[in-house]
Length: 137
Image 1 (cartoon, rainbow, N blue to C red):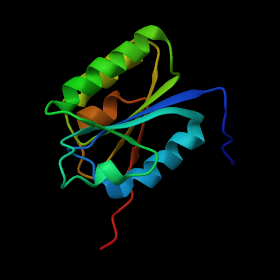
Image 2 (cartoon, one colour):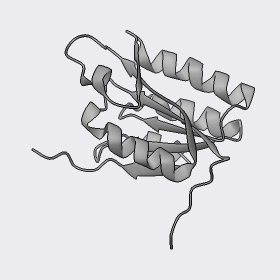
Image 3 (cartoon, rainbow, N blue to C red):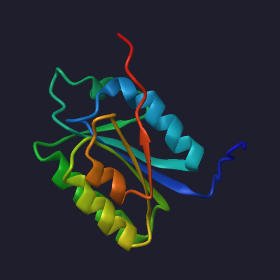
Image 4 (cartoon, rainbow, N blue to C red):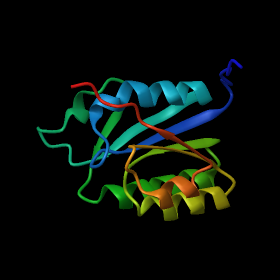
């Protein structure tokens, strides 16, 4: 079955740059495009010189020493203002399960993206969870 893109479906991508590496940025953006129109794509975390996220095409890098807190604040604001239909949370942090549950309570579709060893609590709270592809090298 072919999945079509709904251009009227607005998608926000929020990446925990402290747990997800920038080599996944293109794949994450492709997943967002499958769901609709990407209206926002951000990565949050330590954006020092060692972070490749600053150079990732199509993703705004937001420096924060408290990435999960800032993601939570932004995501709840988005849910309360009814700006997006879907929020993609790319993370391997267990604490994000609380945010996913809250967003679903607001009626949001929450798509989780994470690694193979990502926390099951987070996976279970997402509407849909997809595993990031294995990295080459």
